[in-house]
Length: 451
Image (tube, rainbow, N blue to C red; front, top):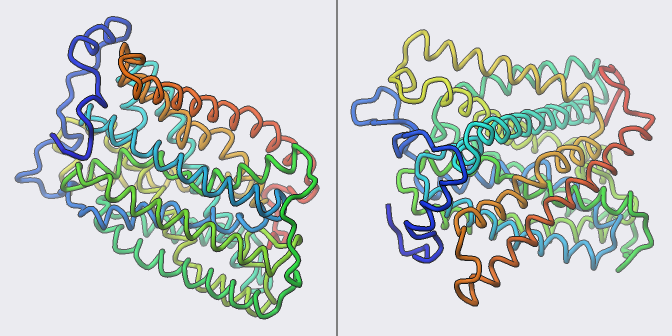
């Protein structure tokens, strides 16, 4: 499995690899392919073209996160916010590339759990596997929460919010039933068109209405608490890396992954910057989060209605990855993964029911959009999007940190990235915990209108 897109010295030589493995548990002798031999399989997983994978990654990433960015700009000021949006996007591109390096070096890796097993044996597998699953379920919950907000907005709180949550749960579960990402990829195209159209409608409407009267603040005087809460929302906008191993595993040509990564990062970073600046410029310091609520009630309803596909499908993609993690863990090395029999299908359905029910519970327990995003970012996105990639690079290059000037520079860079992950986690937990404690509207399992 070779490709010119990676440099040969990006990976340790055989001696360094042998030395490294003296200090860790041996890695099980997995097949290179997580799904086994698919020549005569009833269900084939490795079918994604690079552009299909790119659309899935875009649909997974550009969804909820973009809706919180204008309010982050209002909190931080225009200049710091734009620097953070673009800067964190560039770093996210690099950390996504490192994930591709790790996958190329260890082709059997299908999830963060597998990567943890490579580095730390069974302990690492359980640690990162549990964290990955929790992260994905929290993201699923955030999409159900957004579905509830959307339904309350469109229907003027037509019924109890809990009912809307159950409806969102059922729709998401049904759409997540296909077992292969290729089938989900076609839904991802409608998801991207949906969020792009909704954002354009919001930008045009808010530019006409000008509730903020075009007054902007290049910098603002804010507290650590409010400022870092806004930073966590920017970080969450790039929080798709947790699923990248699974996406690459279902690509027909895994070495095409960098093209999908660049497609994703060019799209999301540019969309984030433009959307955040335009909506903040016209919406002013009181711009709402999610941003679709910043226009008049009628336009807000129209925008939310158009955004329904992305609100649902982006959550479905994360739900699919969560279910697939458990499914592969259960059936890896057996033919049940590739069968259409009762055990295979029944297990997939049961996993989906359990995970989507947990996601609904999270959505009802933390019914405030910004607070849920900051908590997710602090606990998980800080590491899976940033910190862990730095650790992956340090592991891949063990024993070669000072072998050249380039390696020294990259070693320093990746140590900084690990530090960024730790900082986001520590301060993020503080501000999200304070927000959950101080917000008087955080009534769990309530019928109240949360729009």
